Amino acid sequence: MADIRAWRPIIFSCPTTGDRVQGLLPGDPPEPSADDLHSISCAACGGVHFINLRTGAAVDPKRS
Image (cartoon, rainbow, N blue to C red; front, side, top):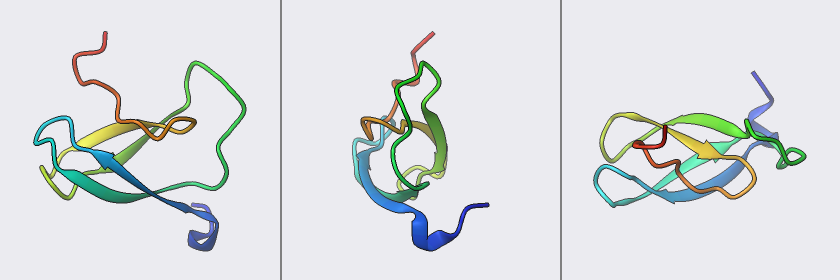
């Protein structure tokens, strides 16, 4: 696991509840790629969401 000091804070909207949730993402955003997703535990709904590392947006759970 990466050094926690290298992680960056993020606030995203939980796609389930719509609440704003604070979390941490690893380091600097990576170079553009189709798989720039990071799983993050959600304090609002207790689930796990995927966050786009470049944009910081939660991925729509209905995404195919």
